[in-house]
Image (cartoon, rainbow, N blue to C red; front, side, top):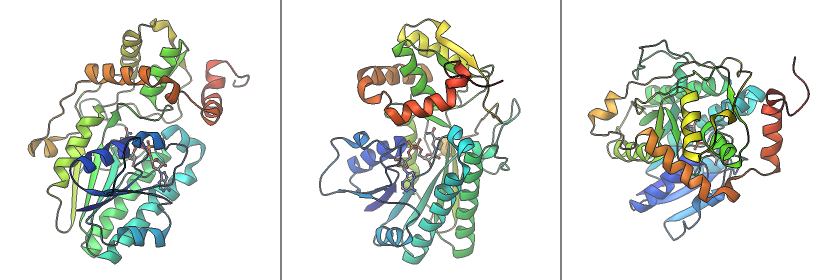
Length: 338
Ligand SMILES: NC(=O)c1ccc[n+]([C@@H]2O[C@H](COP(=O)([O-])OP(=O)(O)OC[C@H]3O[C@@H](n4cnc5c(N)ncnc54)[C@H](O)[C@@H]3O)[C@@H](O)[C@H]2O)c1
């Protein structure tokens, strides 16, 4: 069986590429190698079953070529950082919406491959306390990132309904673990803590995210892929049910890295920052999936990985420029602000 996996040099994609190769799939990995990619995420991956193609999701001819003869297309390629979507929404519309349409067109032309789109709990926007979003919950995206993911979902749904294209949407909560880009919340806090540097926490830190360890997400994907629909649309929420506030994650990182909590520095909040995400994942749980890793153990493993891979995981010049632009004024290391 042949799979086209896009975004395979990113965080989630690289774990899934490894898992699918281990399961005996022939895998083609299409990745544009944006700033978010890390080819080292696939160190040691080689052999006849694996092919890497550097290219853009939005290249229609390339997408058609790669989809042809493929059994399964899983789309992880995306612009994924909410903070960056506030700085440059257009690239999110292009990759996360146009790119998905491009892939869908290729799948439609091919007429054979099943299509899986990776989406996010953020499409539901901020939820009141006590509410968990089921698969049918209405969209209320609050950021350019989540709006682009919601738009992509609507295109997938339109293709499933209009062309009976077999499609599956996976909505994961926040995922964490080894090989995640340094600028995301948990890796950023771990690497800052390890270096003894201030950890910039947005607002009051009471925003609630649902956290799932990467291996548990991979297992859910493996399970769902085994029974994809022959036609029409399937949707699955994939969450752990564990929803500590951000400040609690920050404190746990301090404990695990043996650094004082005084390193946690509250800074001006992100505009439009959603307060709370929560998924009802009973559909995938009914299929027999259950997360095995609790946050405490997942964080312990993640801290251990970043500690062992610190030189590679520390930022390059582009990251340092991004960090200064995003946090410099907030942390008071760059003049400006009110
Ligand atoms: N990480 C999470 O917590 C999380 C949670 C829910 C959903 N998701 C979704 O899962 C998917 C993967 O997320 P991630 O955290 O691994 O992302 P990531 O930012 O680590 O990796 C994204 C990858 O996509 C590639 N890419 C970007 N634009 C491209 C383009 N135009 N053409 C080809 N490749 C391109 C990048 O080079 C990179 O390798 C995304 O669709 C994201 O929206 C992520």
